Image (spheres, rainbow, N blue to C red):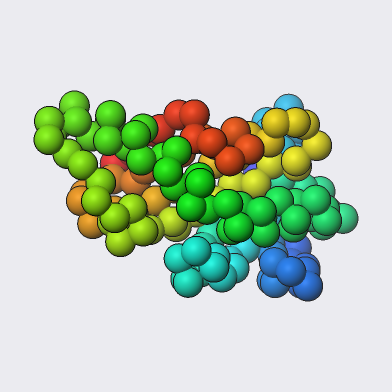
Length: 153
């Protein structure tokens, strides 16, 4: 019965001055973290990006907003750390694969921000690519350095 009750429950939306319109997704603690979903302009790509932000009904924190700005500011450094991880993965299928211009070849589409309480901050960013439209490339980042790459599709 609670499944049906939650299925038809109206989502809670809030308007944040930085992230804009956000929808709160409540998750029971034993199943994970509650979070917000939103879309926002991402200056490095000059396009909107979908964002999942860990949080509670009270909204996101100032530190999460600051960290998002730091991601934008450090995007070049972050991208450089992602390149070898993608190249290593794709060379399993295409031995001579090389990224020539990361920003033209890979487009950020989704970003997951944690609560940012623990240091270092571990977060994820997902890309689509003109190299393979059937797969997405998800990088796990520690502060501003990519540590893992997952290819899904």
